[in-house]
Image (cartoon, rainbow, N blue to C red; front, side, top):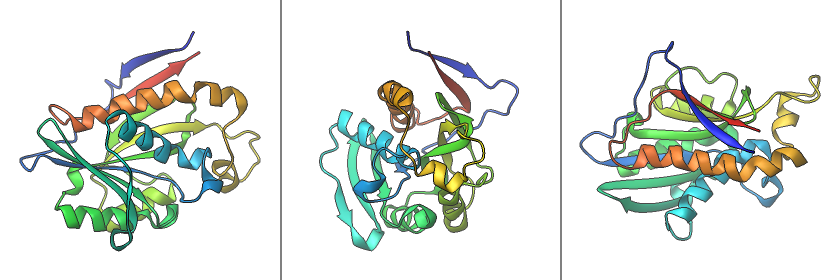
Length: 213
């Protein structure tokens, strides 16, 4: 039976994303545009954001060529929530994040990015604020454009199988059959974490959530 457990990382400093006085938050899902990338490990950020948008009735995505993304905006509670899926391809994601943040005047501290994490095993979701890109080119691009101090929801896609496969090839492969059976529950849990960043206090503590089978 599948089960999610919350396990706060008490040994690490607890960081928080604070929405501040403007009551706006930018939530970004990372991936590559195009149907050929649907269902790949690198597009799990897109999938999670799609699920959150659907469950909260955001409506259809709007293509914003000037902002280099697909966009959806809605007020949840007393917070304006801006959802963004960059159409720049992964390696240039920072261009869209910077453009949307500037347009809506949302500070990087009020930005949350959902992305795949090869160094985290499949079934774990980790949150953090700040830090390096850890080899993720999409995060690297965002850091280059807005700095490090944004929140991250890191969805584990590792370990590589087989070990000798190139990382760039592995992340562009689709999830295996057994993994696909667990994707819906993993996406639901990620959507719940996104809600925590959008509703109420707007704070996201650093923690690990494990999907155990």
